Length: 126
Image (cartoon, rainbow, N blue to C red):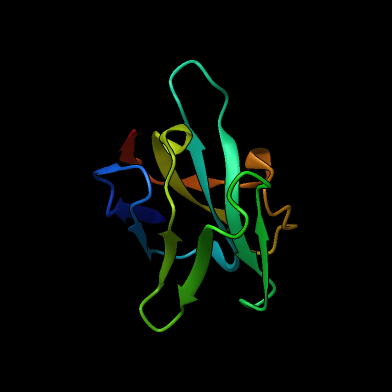
């Protein structure tokens, strides 16, 4: 059974930084296709960042490029999301996701991911 557990969410002021962490366990997920998504109240879930291709490739939503950085530690089976220069519009529940082992990777497409964590809340105040 695959389990993804996020941590690191908090309330911060605009301009601040947070580092989200996702711990993965179980068999069946692809470490070569993992990502972070977010969902704000009343809005659809959107892809924020993804890491794929054995960690050699990354993808970011335009809204976070230059501010967020995704990284992976395969030895620890974790991925991270470093978020800098946070804005109030970054406020959302952030989810870690992983594609199914052997499946195709569509980095920022939520329907391409089979496994999801419970989420960690990020709140940015102005």
